Image (cartoon, rainbow, N blue to C red; front, side, top):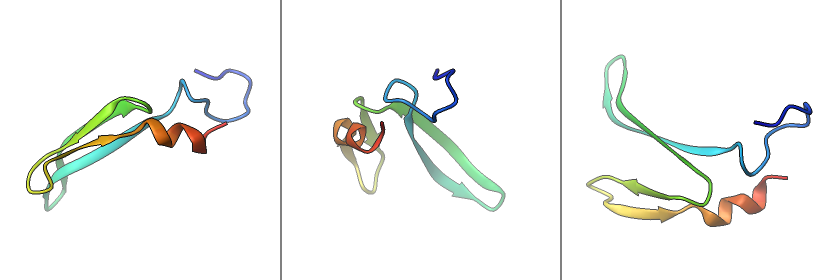
Length: 58
């Protein structure tokens, strides 16, 4: 974690996917760090390459 107070670094950030919506929230929440693949379940059913997201973080 970044302790210098300058915001997140590439090592700190993650993508969070919420799925299976319910009335009061989501039943499933998945997180992966930038650079790791994120599997988006059916009906989309793809694996998202998150490597490019690193370019948007200092």
